[in-house]
Length: 309
Image 1 (cartoon, rainbow, N blue to C red):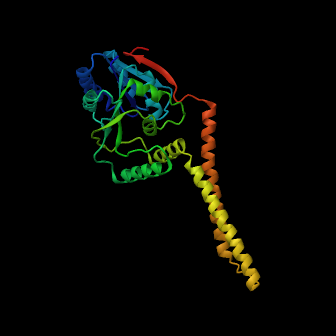
Image 2: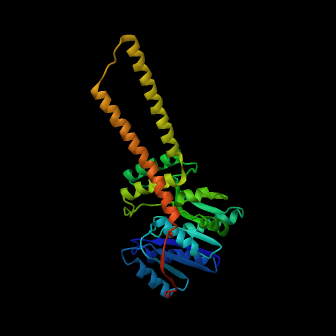
Image 3: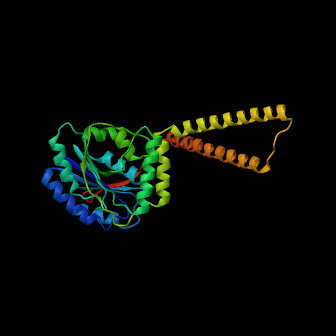
């Protein structure tokens, strides 16, 4: 198998037919043998039935139906585990990333046989204002706390060789955050200019984005724990100096100044920091708990090859 195209389905019924038509037109010009893998991530609409109808007409289409919604990144990992191609093209089905990127990436990989991954990179982000602000904030915070550095210009679309895909599959953590895994795996990666449009529809709510940010940072960095240590050290040192100051005042002037407001403010601040620190530690403990249980990242309900199980 020369090529595998992997994408996920979630509220995607309006895009599947056009995506299939456009990606097949490109794939047929590049590879004699290829497969298109649709991973249905528990989509509540009729995305699964639309993809299955395509599969009934084209035996090259594989539809993986997950038992429930596991999240895009876990669904993508599931798709990679089923991909058989020597080259694997990963992209979104919603047409914000053009299916024709496959042709551009393929030609770029042909130019340099040593390149393992061709990554689509934006020259300019076209997100709505509030999404752009939250996106920029997330990447800045992530890069501060993590040893793995991410670019906010990289998109999902990428063409990968088999050795790189095999390396990605080796990542066994339960909380899958692909942008960091892609960077952490290394290999020879090359950026190619690509375009991405935003049609106004997104299944990523602010709550989901915030949760993903917390999971991403705590999955690839222990710096928040180190930050807590130094914060505790700072306050301990400050408290010690304050005690020394009060003791000197008592010796020199015979009295100390008491302030109810300042005392309560200090107590509330220190209490808030303690609760915040316990919360961060709790997140890491919960991650250890989930990893130790060894639950699967995704459960496959059925796999349809050419419309048949």
